[in-house]
Image 1: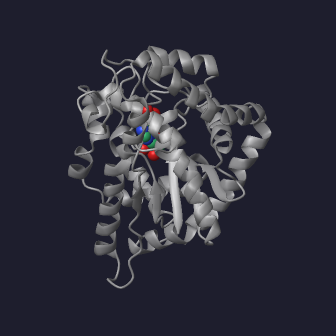
Image 2: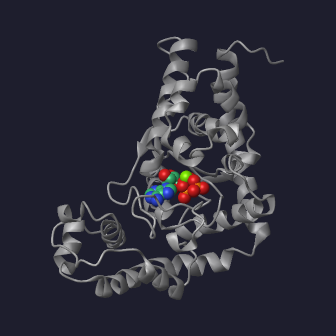
Length: 339
Ligand code: ATP
Ligand code: MG
């Protein structure tokens, strides 16, 4: 079992990152550890330069992201926790796979379409090709399980396509180089939506702070954001299917269900008939309770720059070592001569 996943240090991690991905980092880290497998969690700092960014912010966010992940339960003693910039094999493998990835495949990526919007010509080429870097990120470690939110499903399918084509084109049939990775997507909470707009996902890069709950928000901020979250004026229904046309209400009930570990129907059995005046404070309380221990741990860790850098340096050394055989084999398969 090889677990591999990444998160961009593009801002403060939010509830969508937590329920969609980080909770599963911790779950799979423990499963892998118990069965003698390996878990790699990396900060996708090389991905973060695909959009306009401030270098000073990127450095600060990288350290904060390490502190947040550890506060959420990612354990550097069980998981190889590192940032891509310290493991050049990621960028190298991306280039080696760029001969295999097809323009048409990348053109179909919905994240590219969403993030580029109408101004495709003005985007960085990194924004277009970063799914190939993502493929390199997981293929480098022969990942079997990749815990991600639903928005990354398509990129993982691309990674499988690239791996398959490379294996077909450059390897013997009985000795494929790359393992085909499987996404590990939570059945509930796979896509947490913005608190301001039920049709777009909660994102670090959304300009509005009010659109997301950051994992480091204090109790007052959490309650304020939940109370201001966009909703309709109807009371909650008693069955999940009646939420289908009510994106904002569906999102809030889904968040509540994921936090308390119940189905949406069970939550509605308890809260059906309630208006948002009653439901929002109940949701706020559950959120505050869930995030309080993460917040406390983050506060202890966040200012110890030396300790955070040491975690990354240790993880990167280990990652470089484990990545090497696959990287070497890729150069060799392509017929590239190296010393
Ligand atoms: P950015 O806006 O900079 O792309 P992001 O919020 O999308 O940031 P990423 O770092 O791109 O966060 O993604 C980290 C992980 O969190 C990925 O596995 C992604 O699928 C998951 N994720 C991101 N947003 C959500 C969401 N709203 N609901 C569930 N999972 C999410
Ligand atoms: Mg994203």
